[in-house]
Image (tube, rainbow over all chains, first blue to last red):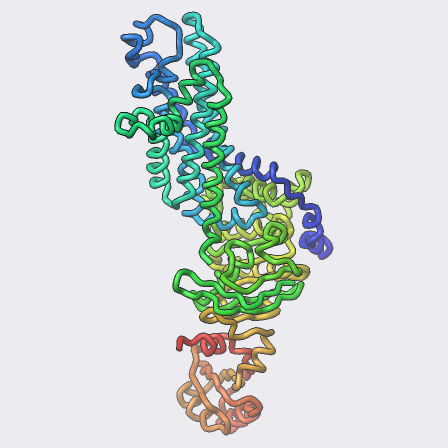
Amino acid sequence: MAETMNRDVSPSAAGSSLTIKPARNVWALAKRELGFYFNSPIAYIVITLFLVVAGAMLFVFEMPEAGGDFFAANEANLRGLFGPTGPEAFGGIPLLFVFLVPAVTMRLIAEEKRTGTIELLVTWPVSDAQIVLGKYLGAVLFVGIMLLATLPLALTVGGLGKLDVGVAIGGYLGLFLLGAAYAGLGLMTSAWTKNQIVAYLVGALLCGFFYFVDGMLGLLWDGGRDFIAGMSFKAHFQNIARGVVDFRDILFYGSFIAIALVVTTLSLQARNWKK
Amino acid sequence: MIEVSGLTKSYDDFQALKGVSFKVNRGEIIGFLGPNGAGKTTTMKILTCYMPQTSGTVNVDGKDVNADALAIRSRMGYLPESTPLYTDMLVYDYLHHVATVRGVRKDKIRERIKVACEMCGILDRVGQEIGTLSKGYKQRVGLAQALIHDPDILILDEPTSGLDPNQIVEIRNLIKRLGENRTIILSTHNLPEVMATCTRILIIHQGRIVADGTAAQLEEQEAENERLRVLLRGVEPEVARLELQTLPGVRRAEVVMSTEPGVAAIELEAPRGAELRSATFNKAVEKGWELLELARLQLDLEGLFRKLTREV
């Protein structure tokens, strides 16, 4: 008995065989976030809400360019999901994501701050960058799952008529990149506060701003117009959703996400600045 | 093993630590005492690399906590003050998550979870959601989390707060057992606990270390008085007190709560070296009192604590 006790408490049992691998840490943290969504009702509520609204957008809502709803237009396309085109038009999943993605990301860091679990998280042997990447990966995977859940809608449309597969794939790729960029912004605002509601509101505001910024250009002076238009999520999305996957659009989203994640990491490290 | 020197920490205009220095050797169990706001938690947060100090250094085996944070964290187990846990997770899933992030080898994870749960007495709760556990069980999950990777340094911020007396004894025994081959720093308000578990005591007050030593050393340095507890039968407590007060050397005689009916309990205080025991015995014989107990009290930690941490 005494021997087993000694064995139990000896530090050599696992202590010497610890292996810290960054990729394993990031994946473990991402899995934890995904697990949170699917172990609670949140995932199912968000996905159901998302599917209902997306379905209505596709089949029920009037489409200005077609002069009626999906059936009146009598053409098999996913324009209802991807939204109307043009700088001043808005709608579809890109708009829906403005409200939904920050709801997915709002708790990621704010909740850890509120409950104090952040104190354990940052004293585990993981770097702040790994924490940010892990949480981001969890959120992006969730956004991906939301999009996958709409595939039956796309398949239904494909069954009704001849769907332009290239445009559909481009649209989905665009939606995923757009959602990933929103998730970056949402994660960033979640790192700024311990209040989820604040994180959500500021996140949705930022997402809405970058989504619609090219529509506000009329209010702006000429010189800034090109630069600001280049920042618009919607413009880059519409490029990709036309089925033309341009490297520059992907680079735009990539660098936008990178900046958001770096700012998030810096915000986490801000606890170290007050010396 | 752990070497803290000249540690200071300021929050805005409040100086929480004003130059804290101490050393901890391998295998010691350090009891970290101090009133609320004295700097215990701040010191622990710096030791665990949660936040950096304003000035001073902390070395663990010669490595600086700020420069080698990841390496040091991986050898440390930490239980923060209010036991923050992911309440939505099952105990098993949570410990699995921590073990993974802590870098426990995949094939060892199950075994480590089992060992940690056994040690903390939560083996029967592994399938339960953490949020539905009682406070005592949450505390143990927090402890299991700190042990999961078998660290050689454990930093526990109030590990027994919120536990019932049985659980406190269990955790104390566990800490003693763990301390056989690990270094443990634990903070607490519970003074008897320190006497029961710790090999050395550190008292911190207003950001400074005011006492550092084993219980015996502290008694030697700090206590000018020796104290006796006398239990008597067949006499009114107040009468006995007045009589005993007249014994040579007695500075203070006080009636204390008696646990038995009809028994007077009195505490006597005299300068060290004044041999009060025989005088008390003779007095009792002379007066015809029944002397039930005559005990020299060990280090009066509470008195020492109050003396050292009195607000000035």
